[in-house]
Image (tube, rainbow, N blue to C red):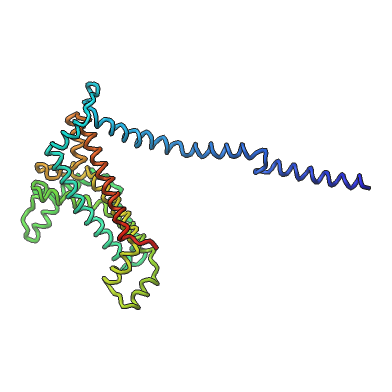
Length: 323
């Protein structure tokens, strides 16, 4: 009897051992499964890593190194030390271009964020949901268009002789405005075209932030006597301050790199009134074949972008409130 009873128990133990060994997490398959998971993860990450290395990291490093050399593609590179930076600092065109870029950023970013926030508040407060969906698509649509094609179209709209804008002004008795042939007019057109095409992204960010504010917060503010502007000043703006920080950082970075609109609309003119830093980089590299100097200008612009972004995050501690 004891021998007969021991056999089923031994068989049961052997069966349980076999089940544990054949299970997915069993001791015999764990190392191979772990290696397979790591291999699969690296295979999925490989395209992104290779793409960032080839198209981002290597070009940045090459540009920084090239800033210390003279190179015109035809002859071999020659080490120049800091000569490209000193030559850039003494170039009046470079100084004017950086000044134009800073002025453009100051005006365009304020307009972009102001228009985006104003429209987001208006649509969120006043319109039904189906109209919100329509305006989200309508305002974002210009952003997916090519900046060059939009600028070509706007160049015809603002033409002094046969442009639609001057024709509309003429119907109300306003004489034709030389939009693209005067410094102030050309700068105004560049800012308006840039803001029109880019405010849609900031608009979506603000609209999403406004949608996440609990309605109870506004009701509590109303009970305390806050209405209209005071409600938005003391409730809306503090609660969307993290989104405002993200929108402002991205808007300033993009505006500092503006190229398509001024290049297509005005070619940097009249004179140098709309020439930007990236336009100078393009002209120095591909028209004057001074790739070392162009890289030096690009390095300075990169440092300016990094400094401005760091300053924004440092100042954000005073006005950004996280729930």
